[in-house]
Length: 281
Image: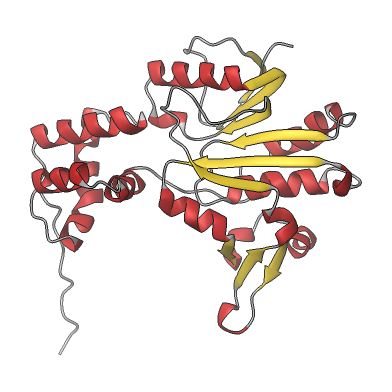
């Protein structure tokens, strides 16, 4: 007898009206803009979750999402719709700029405030922390603070735990990895956990970038907002970038993703290099 044929699971059908309801909900709550062409993608990415819940129509799922007082199902929906792919030292030129340009500028005050505004599972803020620690001669003399935020409670929990599989560190030099992460043994073999000196530099919190105000007091030296604005339409991008401008100190910096541009967005920043912007001093 030959192998049994694979059973193909079909996506649950989504009507145009159902798609439009989800599109409006997602846009209003998160700023993510879905084009008409994303209707089949939405059906594909949400069908498995709906089957787990025993739901057969998108109207049923919409009612479950909007009636959940904990908002956990909406967060799950966003995780499925958006991509949380990230790596340590992704788009390395930003970390080189931080080490070679920004840290020397702040050497006199030895104090830096950085916001990783869409931190996902934590690779970005931990890379920021490693860059800061490795970029100065005596880290104990510096006041490093990194705020790491995301809309998803699920990715924030993983980020705060600070545990990653070995394959996540392919772009991290071995000596840097040894200094900042503990190698797992026994049942934890193949995993690495962030060391306390790095973890204490970072504060994780849930934050929605669509809010009018952010719970941030100190003026920031640098904001990372990378590979997020690709999900937003231009008006949303403009509002967000101008909010970042308010929270940066004069001369502060904004980093965006390599596939992003503010060319068509009205904003007050000065372009220093592709994806690197500065607030006027």
